[in-house]
Length: 265
Image (cartoon, rainbow, N blue to C red; front, side, top):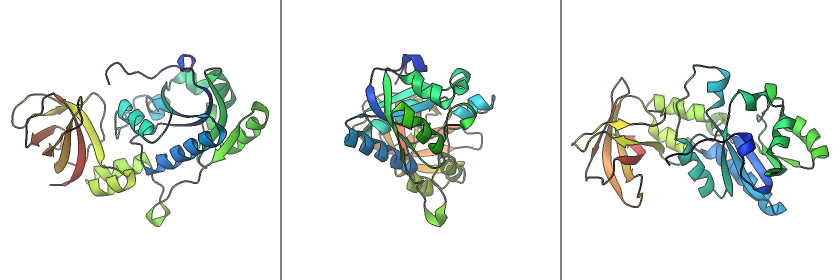
C-alpha cells in the first residue's frame, strides 16, 4: 500500500466510543488474535467500535536508537489482517519520543475526542506510556475516574507454557523452522517484495526489513500483490548474505508479489 504512514496522536481518525487494544501486532499471530477477539467481543457487548492501535516503527527502534527489528510483515499487511479478524478500525500510530514521553493517562486523554476509550483490553504483561507505567492495575484505577473498563486477557501459551511472541517466531525463522513459525502464527510466514527482473530467477527487493528464514531453499505460494486472486507455486532461495531469489512455475503480470512460506524444499 503506497503512501501509507503512521499518524501522530493528534491526527487520529474520528471513531467515537471504542474498545481499544494496542501493540505492534507484527505478523498478527495467534497470541495477538486472543487480544483482538477479546477487543471485538468487548466492543460488541457494549455497542462500541473495536479499535487496534498499531505502533510503527517498532518501539525498540526508538527506545534503542540504531536497532533494526526484522518484521514478520509490512505495516499494511498487519493492518489488513487485523481488519480481517473483525477489528473495525486499525490505526497505524507513530511511535516516537513525543508519544513515548506521555504518561499513560495523558496518552489516553490525548486520543479524545476522536477515540473515546470505554474499554481497554490488556494482557497481564501489557504496559504502555512513560516508564511503562500503564499496567492493567494502574489503568483499572484510572478507569474508575475516567469512565472506562479494563478487560484482561490471559496470555496465550503453547507447548511447555512458552508464550507466543513475534520474537519467538523470528527465532523459529532464523532456525529455518518455517513449519514451527506457521504453527505459532496460525498462518504461513509471509514475505512481500518487488521482483528485480522478469528472468528465470529474479531477485526479490523489500521495502521493509523482513524476518527472513535461514539460508536455504523454501517452497512458497506466490500471489500478485496487486491482484491476489490467483496463486503460483515457486521456490525461494536465500543465500548467507540475505539475498533472495525466486523461481516460479508461471509468469507474474506485476513486479510486486506476496509470498507464503510453506516448507523447506
